Image (cartoon, rainbow, N blue to C red; front, side):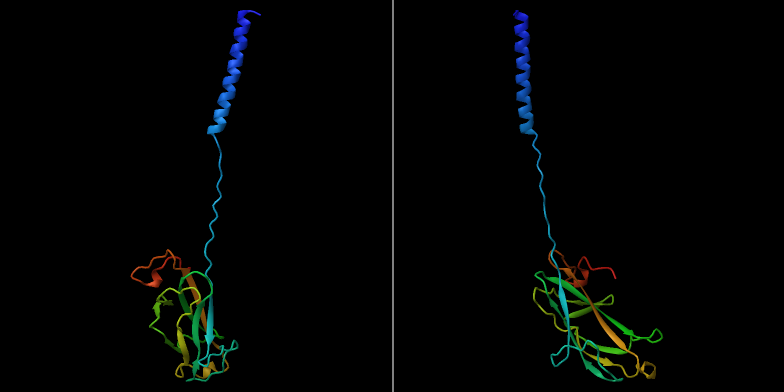
Amino acid sequence: MGKINIRIIIFALAAIFMSLISQTSVAYYSTVGKATNVVTSGNIQFIIHETTDQGTEFPSTGVYVIPGDVVSKEVTIESDCNHPFYLRVKLVYGVDSTELSADDCFKLNINNEYWELHDGWYYYKDKVDPNETTPEIFSHVEIVGSKVDNNYIGKTLTLTVDAQAVQSENNPLTDNKTYTASGWPAE
């Protein structure tokens, strides 16, 4: 073999050797990683309780009333989760007739010490902690005699309690007003 062939073989071996070294270093420096981050949000749950002043459940079928009656109905809300939350309640009045209005038929004794009216909602003034039950929103309903006249005979008046909650953790308030919390659902 000539000197030139030996040089070509040595040059070829050196090129192969350099190629192997560079591939190893490329593999070493170009690693690929993948991270999966799982975030689970908290779950807010509550139970609306409607009881009488005797401590019994308010009848789901309602009660028979005549104008001027005062009906015992204590409405509280119990936290049924492991996270604190802010709470608001809307009272929706109804009657089984499109010609009649129930808006003025009820007079409620709202517990203003713990509940604040803002934009048609009653906001609980504090956060509701896990396994806590709020003070009553109201404890009785008066059927306003001057508003419930003969047009209401045989009609069904309804008072529906709608409630909504948003997390209180990492949800700062302005002026300590719970209605300023973020995340309240649109109506």
